[in-house]
Length: 169
Image 1 (tube, one colour):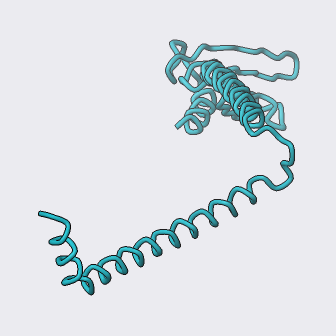
Image 2 (image 1 turned 180 degrees about the vertical axis):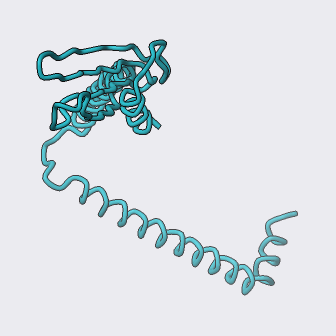
């Protein structure tokens, strides 16, 4: 094809070519407006973020915040470890107490005798009994493992143990 054929083609189709160029310019204008709006929003967000931050190095500021986060994570990990240790200790501490007061002898009043059950989370512990009399007092301790004692328990001691076991449930 020589140059004259191009010229004839362009002149014959000039309205269509102008229409296509107009549409392309209009699309380019829309893209430009869209990019301009997005840039304006981004600029507003940047200004909002930078309020009160004149002459501040953003990189240094971010590094300082990262260091603060690392320190916070370290503290949280330390606290988590301490909580785990406390959880292990708590299992063996006295958590459930049951007490029954009673009169051991008819000639004494005021329910001065008692049975006291002290159990941990695993239902292990002791039952203490104090028998109060006018002339003497006695204290007995009986071990409890898994909510049961290998020693014979009195009715009052069993009642104190049951009260403690009810709290353990």
